[in-house]
Image (cartoon, rainbow, N blue to C red; front, side, top):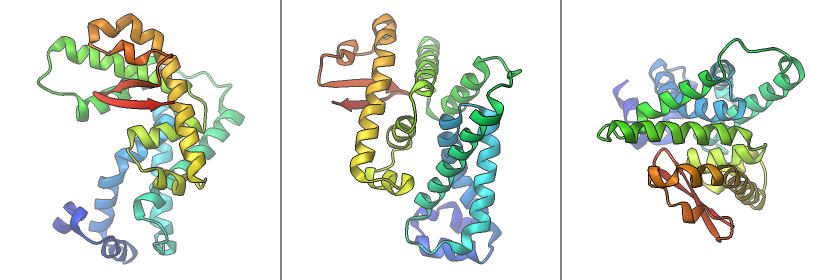
Length: 235
């Protein structure tokens, strides 16, 4: 399995061949490589950790069962993300039809905390002061909460571009829309998120060290900070 631990340097065709041959090592690598990013995308579409976990599992079942039908017209990563978006969208539609009337027994902050906790483990600078870590957590939780309020398909476009760091071309292929539509959705999603965060940034910006002036709606460029990353919004 060692060769799959560093599969970045292995030609994708070779990895796909191993997957199609039923290699356990290849499948172990695949899950390790894609589970977290797939869960991250699905969670931000569904906003429920339990549903996201179930849907992520379903995505990998479909990947395993459908590998024999993968012929390399797109990259393996794009193909997996396309399945993830499709399954998350289906689950979301089902939720609105059948589950929206149910009352969750979990406290409202549970999903927000669990997601922030998992992202913090990977992204928070361990050398920051306790105050800085708390501030990062608070800001991150607020951004996550406001992002959930951005309507589809704009939220998914922002997640894929600004959080998953996919190219415009990859997003177009995953969502199966034109490049122009992708750019339009990202712009509108970023603008919606900026508007939702501007007032909050003005309130807490000075003590958190945010460049509040850059969030002003009368400027051509605004910025949000997500886990220490700046998301540039060009209008």
